[in-house]
Length: 380
Image 1 (cartoon, rainbow, N blue to C red):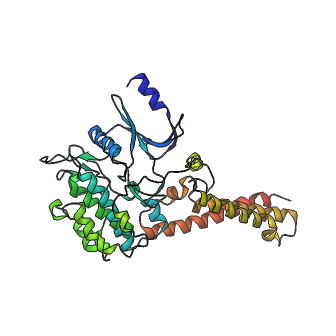
Image 2 (tube, rainbow, N blue to C red; image 1 turned 180 degrees about the vertical axis):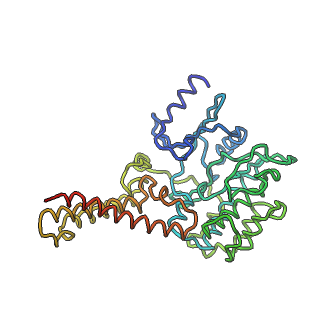
Image 3 (tube, rainbow, N blue to C red; image 1 turned 60 degrees about the vertical axis):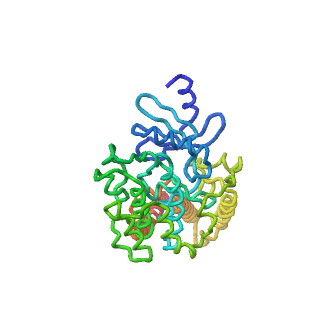
């Protein structure tokens, strides 16, 4: 890498680590202030990223992150990608239960993206379709991210040279039983839908809803027994999407109009990790709601209502400290401040996540009581 390119790479300042391996970071350009995702890839397919780069340049409507720049040296490929503002399906799974119709709608949108990728020459196989690699942006659009495991399909190969994928979502051929193909991603879509509906991608026999036969066909062991392509799978899902709350026939194909832009104010705030809950996205309506909520909470805490039964100044101090700490911890936990809830509740099954969340919150209340009582108990 030349000195000039090293300087250009250094302009993308790392501000937040986004993965557990220390290879993916949220970054901000020191001159333009533009937010992006910076990846350091020791294992990669540069041909795949070259094709993605050229295709997203000419097809900005494709719902995958645009590649802003790429740098390489003897050991690593450094990729600077567009940052998609929104929530992953993994985060949404932690917050709500999805209906069959909603999952079918997401499946059709994902199939639209995959149809485009599989129609390239050569086709791009994503190979890592899972909830954390799909984002619903702030406008409700679905994006497929993280092409670090992707490869170009080479007709005639017997098996993949590098075995990559996520356990539970990876098709059998990703474990050395054949070459990855468009049917590999079809398997991933089936495992994804199963996980969204049951909380587990492992056992398709757990689910008996109206998408059961579609999921079963997606996840068959022999690729030739699955759907022939993403378009066939999309057509199988279409009858189930019209009752979905966010159904919009136009959203099932790419819009040719330019995407909405963030305001300068929103971009300047977005994803500064230490901002209070409600301000991290930079979305005006969320910040207005946060200001109103915090104002109400502050009014209650300072009104004396919560300390009206206190008989002494020490008791008033105790009750005030207790409620302040409990309020801060409650907002921080349920608002997932700095990802705390995601870290404390890593379970995949929805029922287990709910139970752990309740137990952890009970522990927070007990801890808050201990923190508040300790200084009060030392007062003579």
